[in-house]
Amino acid sequence: FHMPAKQDTRSLSSVGRISLTTEKPTNRSIVGMLMFVEGEFAYDDVVTFVKQRIMPKFSRFSSAVTPSFKFLPLPEYDCSPHISIFEAPKGMDNEENLHTLLSPLQNEPLDPTRPLWDLHIVHLQSENKTVLYWRIHHC
Image 1 (tube, rainbow, N blue to C red):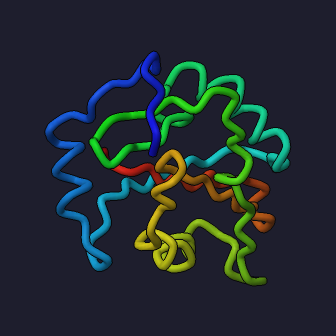
Image 2: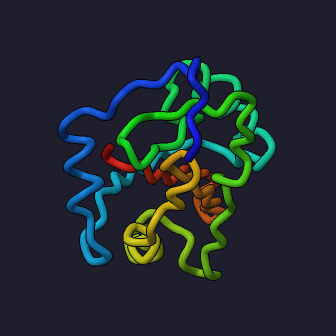
């Protein structure tokens, strides 16, 4: 990363540094969170929600982590590549099966060149709910 001289950066906490330096392919430092929402949320609505409500309040959603353990703000960052739709197999789209369906995603690495988070949208058609599965690096 090249950091311009007048960039508003902040250092990672001690815990953040440890979570990055001790991470292994078999033990990712990624926090997973499920949010259950009534009804179906469209992809564009979720992207708009993240851009307008999450990113302005939490700079980590638009900041990359540099090799020198700093958050580097990325102005006008497009969050849409972080957000995807996860298609549950037919008959498996209920709350009971969510952990089985999503657990393989939990240990997938996050792209270190981008802000360290992603969001998967899962529509539970059998229950008329949308699940937002967030993965956010512990740093």
